[in-house]
Image (cartoon, rainbow, N blue to C red; front, side, top):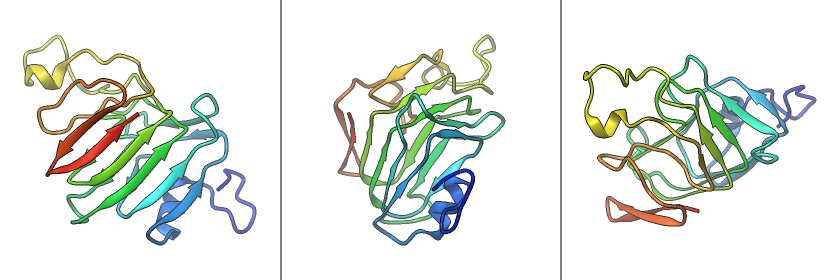
Length: 162
């Protein structure tokens, strides 16, 4: 896909996901994309690299949402080669999905709508955001921190962060 969208390319990551079939591979060209990408099926989505492919989710809930809630049985999603930043909540959110691999991404400056100075949310939800490289900052149930190369078992299926 390419932002200038010469045929058969599309201009947004969301449009590429909408046009995809399960297990497709989507290559995302360098550029800045202002969107909240919802992934409802098994896909491999690869950016040109975190220094050149940026999802700026300013004003949006998430940068990338791997949505296993509305898509039961979602598995086999891979996300690589992006900087995801400025989301109101999670840079990358994974819910009810299995065999998800998230690698070679920079996830930073998210949780923009959380008020850290007020005591209006749970402590684990209001941790001060920080830059995370080669891993991802995501909120999965009560998990608020994890280490690079960690495997989190969720619904008895691994989600791997490299």
